[in-house]
Length: 113
Image 1 (tube, rainbow, N blue to C red):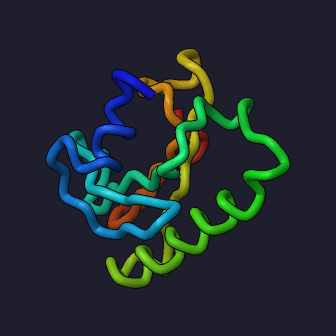
Image 2 (image 1 turned 90 degrees about the vertical axis):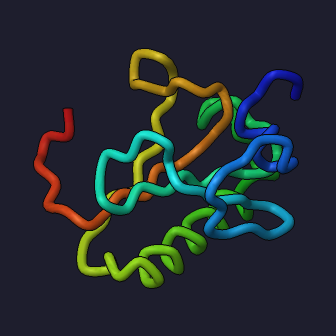
Image 3 (image 1 turned 60 degrees about the vertical axis):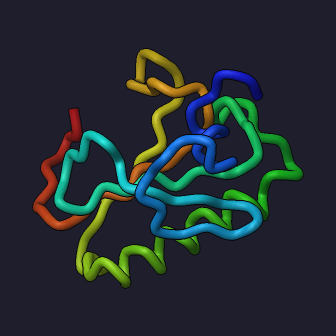
């Protein structure tokens, strides 16, 4: 997908602080962290957002959550963390590529915003 910053990171054409990668998923530190731990977990496959998922993406979305679990353990935030997926500009999605924010290391309030 031309021009997608997350696709460029996944192809290693742009620098990032990668904390996990495998054939399906890449995870890296957010450049503008909102918590002591703020990692973006991104499928390598270009999917615009949750509304563009298909039934063939079920395993991929499950894998993303398992990666989040392992990263939470590695970063020692398993006592409490938040996993966020914004869908659409009105929800705050600024990059048109499905991604999940893993946030931890501080107390979060409810409602979130």
